[in-house]
Length: 215
Image 1 (spheres, rainbow, N blue to C red):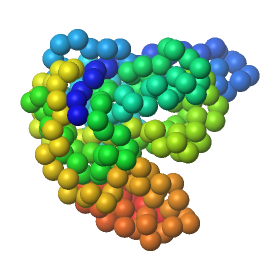
Image 2 (image 1 turned 90 degrees about the vertical axis):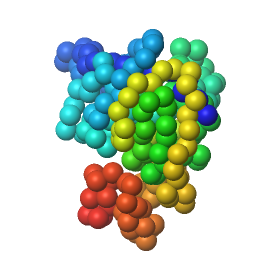
Image 3 (image 1 turned 90 degrees about the horizontal axis):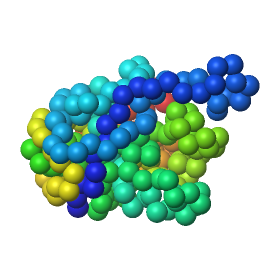
Image 4 (image 1 turned 30 degrees about the vertical axis):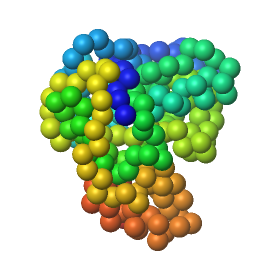
C-alpha cells in the first residue's frame, strides 16, 4: 500500500449566471484539486493549503482528509471514454494504491510519513460531484458501483509526501468495510438492524451515528 499523490484545492466559482440547466448554474466549491509537490502538513482539520467552500456539510475533524483508490480511475476512463481523469478528479486529497472500499474498514488507523489517520466514514456522493463532472445521475452511479472514497480524521499531525508507504496500524472493526457501511446507510429504511449495527461502531463519525440514530 502506498500514497500515489497528494492534491490540494481552494474554493472557486464556476458556472453560468441564470442558466436554465441546474447543472450549469453558478456554484462555488473546492472540489477541484491540484497536485502538491514535496512534503505536506496534515493538521487536525486537514492538509495545509487545502480548504472547503461549504463548511456546513464539509470539513471538520471527522472529514479532515478525503482518500480515494487510484485503481478506480482506469475504470472511470473506460466507462466514460475520457482520458482526462486521474488523481484529484474526484476531489480527493490522497490518492492511494492497495486500498479501496472493500479493503478499508471504518476505524482503520493508517500511518503515512509522520501522520496517523483513522477512517471515519464513507464519502457520500453529492450534487457537487455531479456538477464537477457534468453527469446528472452521478449520485446513483457512485451508489451503484461503490467507488465513493472515504474520509479520514487525523490522529497524529505530521508531514507526509507522495510515494510513501501506508501502514495499517490498527483494524478495530474488520467487519465494517467502507462499502458495507455505505450500503448500511443507503438502505437504512429497508435494513434497520444493519443500520443500527453500524451506529454502534465507535469509530464511525459523530454525524453518521446521529443520522443513523434518527432513521
